[in-house]
Image (tube, rainbow, N blue to C red; front, top):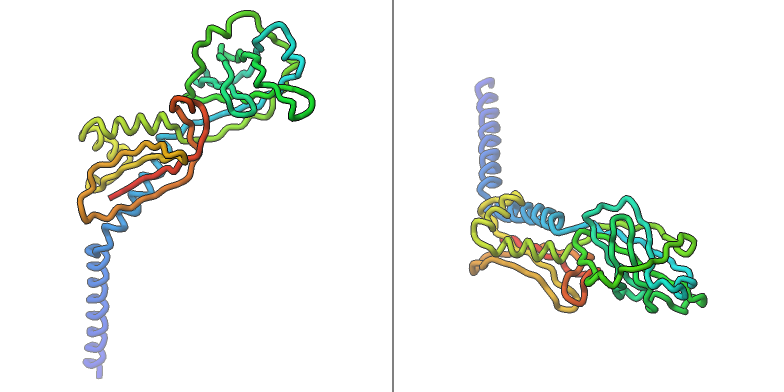
Length: 255
């Protein structure tokens, strides 16, 4: 009886050991292992590429008393302190059109153009939006902002500042140039983004108007391509759209 009992236990143990080996082999030699690697690489690459092509954008809504329009000075000075000196300025009217401006440290000089003022509120007060970012292209030429300027805090109403992170068209373009500059630089990017050497990647942004920045290595025939995309706010640098924020599809592809 005892011998039979031991034999029965040995059979069960042998079966469990066998099943454990089968499961081990299935997990580590499974054809789906490559897919799991691709999926995790795609997620990490997407996060890192978004991080490395994004920039902070700050904005300040400014109300201007209607009396500023009738002053002999055609330029107004607005003091905004505590903003990183590396950040450049862009000023827009309520339609998003650029207004001539220049940053002199904490002082923003703005040309008092008629487009600042609108009768929609019945009072004829002015409105501008001052934007700050490292990737903004400043207004040129700024010489027309020299001369006597109006500086009266009673005529200026500074609203609540807003800060957000947006994708930078400039940084996507710069990264694309590195990606396409040669095999060595491409491989360095892969290492920087902690991608396994067997993984290839590409990325891009596509705007609603059809503008796009994309870069991809040649993809071998028969290879599955995995992609991740997200609709994001994007700070533009394209001529005629400098400083504007538009939506784009941010795309990362892994294979």
